[in-house]
Length: 224
Image (cartoon, rainbow, N blue to C red; front, side, top):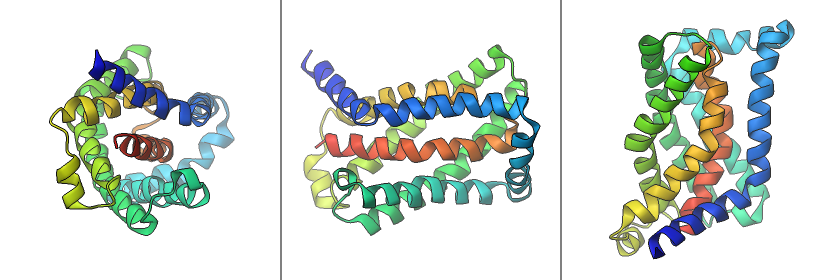
């Protein structure tokens, strides 16, 4: 019971701190899908982004993550004192590089989902892609890796502090809060992301990722 209460407390505190931006994110994702299919000028405005992703592939995916997961969250951290880490420049550089690598991996994973389930926009297709993304990719790869990385970031990149603070119950203390919060944020967003054409999916998921990076930093800090 104590472990469950601790996990619940970390998740609740992080969600509370970012509840309004999360609601805005969900609403924006839903409106973006509606506008893309109902408003031709909006779809046309995204064509350059679509072509860039088609032409550049994983390079465009990495650049997207570098900006939206590194530089943009860094701007928020700089302007909002309660989110500002002690070593801001290093945090921005590290999380940008880390997320750029995952951007490449996500690009290939989205391509795999397209091969497995097609490019339809029906509820069943969107649900299958979201389930694979959240309950396989995120559960087995993304959440554990992010939990370790942001646990280290929260300790000012100190290997000594990382080793000293590393909990024996790291799955319940570090991984599960990251995973549960990920599901809360990304299950609704994934439905919207997978409704777009494949070349836009990795790009638009990066826009949503700026918020998620701030959430991960909150989780890492609260794991102290």
